[in-house]
Length: 334
Ligand code: TYM
Image (cartoon, rainbow, N blue to C red; front, side):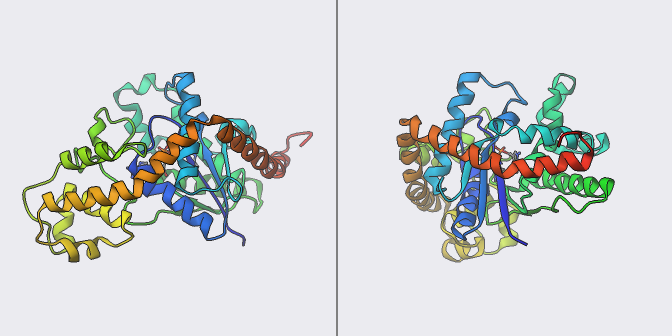
């Protein structure tokens, strides 16, 4: 069976190191391996929580710039924004009638995002994972590269595909495989090693943004929380120290090594020294991406044309699949 890759990133706030190491870097690798890839700015997911309209437009361009600057080639891969391809919303409706309330009630990300304001959360936020399943399956994508936090949503995607196939007695939607790969599938906050690095953390010092300059990167790493002990020798000792584990994981991912290899080099060294090396590495790796992003967003015409072209190609790919899904359901005229 041919491999088809789909993944999405929400155009909200800044892209950060977690998005890069957990997802975008793998998007680039999968493209370089010669796969057919679709990478989407999921603006319909973004509005499940309030977004200022102007900022949403700008953030969509900024994420596209991040994709391109990181190495995604808009000619080889399809990059586009979700709201332009109506088939996502159409299939999401069909899936709303396949997915069960009980399944959505188990989604931990909804609970985290809605928090104590559950009654006041949008219906869209609750339905978020169903739209995700539609994003993936409207292209019959077989593999989905994501960070660890999306694992549960991808299990739901598999459940929806399976139930659709069973309900209608067809073998139509593929059972998608997640690709959760690398040493940094869950990058943690620089201020608290037990919390995920996230766009919504109020502290700027909790995350490194892809557009941060060398001074900001250095400052954030210098202030990153650590403990007074030197770096340990073994992975078991490292795992007991969340902040140390996080920084070693970031170093490993940025230098294409394993945590063990990093410990072989740095065990017994103090964090003051390790942080210096991590800063040099991060500035070297992220600096060129950040400046290319700034250059690209200064010329929105290029990005806008790439997204328009991507949306046309995506829509053409989705058209026969949504038509067949409607026909399977029994919609007249499909
Ligand atoms: P978003 O925008 O929240 O995250 C985009 C990608 O970044 C990964 N990620 C992380 N990886 C490691 N460490 C972190 N701290 C970290 N924070 C974020 C996420 O796992 C994700 O891969 N729901 C998706 C968007 C989406 C989607 C899809 C993905 C919508 N439809 C279909 C795949 C397929 C999301 O989390 O976006």
